[in-house]
Image (cartoon, rainbow, N blue to C red):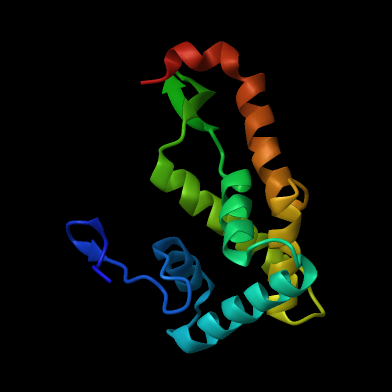
Length: 157
């Protein structure tokens, strides 16, 4: 399989099971202290659990849809104009939207205590797939904040 480049100076190889660059980015974000094998095992166990719970769905499709459902379309950024700071709604670039979605899903998983990580991750992915859960709530809050501050949209640069 040919290698895919994310940018000229950075290369991420696809994961061995699904051959997806997005999965590998997700695994890299799960990873702590360079333990990629552990992160891969957590992710693959999670995918097996998703497949077990949602028998009629493809687990990679559930993962991709969950990421898509959590991606923000707009966000607010602070902009200083004439001594006052405004929260200005701005469109989010694709790469940043994906990074935020991954971050919010993993934040939601890490906040939950008392169970194996792969089970918590499977719960969060299934909830995000159904447009529920903590990560989707975070996205909705960002969108509400942008909607509330759309009067300052003309300050966007």
